[in-house]
Image 1 (cartoon, rainbow, N blue to C red):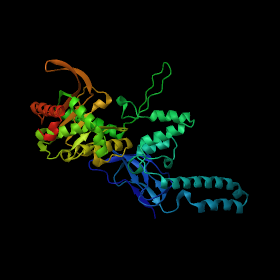
Image 2: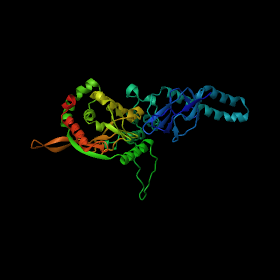
Image 3: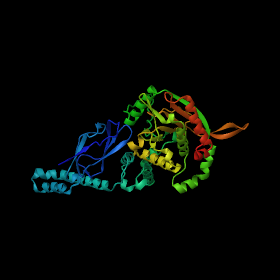
Image 4: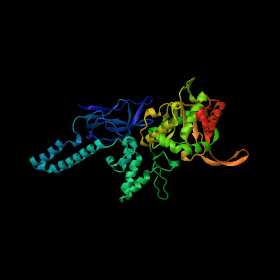
Length: 440
């Protein structure tokens, strides 16, 4: 009696998924809850576990196939799998007892037994292998590593991408030049190139003009679809302002050591912006609203999305109820989202919803931009690079660290006055952080 391997229930609004990677082959031994296949939706990569112990009896959908919730993609049969020792013992005995034809088959049977033994060893190793994210598993496979040999520094001993790269470099230090070169290829790119794993094209021979056509990932296709949709349906306008970051930088420098010691997380700039944006949204509810048909929906809560780069593209995990979060809660959640994005471990719950978004192009070196609204939201705040500039203060020219802020908003629901006042409120709170505490 075999057990069906089905695509699990997909999140709301997700119609189908694409099979990305099979981690088991037909005939391999599997254990209950062991990850068998990765599937990709519009937003995340989901891991599909085995529903029972047994042997991978059938695989009915190949990598790249589009599947739907509840679809049967394989069957798991009962048995010991490719690693069963009794089947390996029977075949050599058959060669000894048989006639000449059977004797000639004995070496082949022995080779099959060797393959079965190797498969059994793989299955046994899988039992002790730490849980790996799709991105980490891919990297481990590329370098032909044993995950059990890699020390994980993530939460609960989870192996991170950096752990794999460090292991590769350590192994290369023993003389493996090829491994060192491979590790260099996977090191994190400079800030301006962060968030992509597309390999650089090899130099072309003189006189040739090669092209390479690759299909979009589901995430990239969905991003493209939503960007075109919002450009066509919303009346997007962008207003700008600049903020003197010196007060926030001084406050952060003065207290960051004590903050990290007490809360166990570093104090960054994003929590200041989330805190200021939350208070500004409270004062200007239109910016926290959305359009649904001919109705305006005013949200009585504050769920702020923070744009994060991942190997698969830009994703926007959600900080929920930010009016009830402390700055340490915000920093901790943002750090966890960043780690999960690198591992490809963000869930649909992490990415669903949101009433406002903050995007920080400054980490890539952006000086000024016009961010695009994340529908059905009505506004998005763009942060940019902090740069020292001469400014006039009390009749004197002084040098100050300045950041340009950009607020893109849907003019159908937000008037220019509210948009400008919203951005000025954020500016005022950042230039005088005491306002964040006093809510003035």
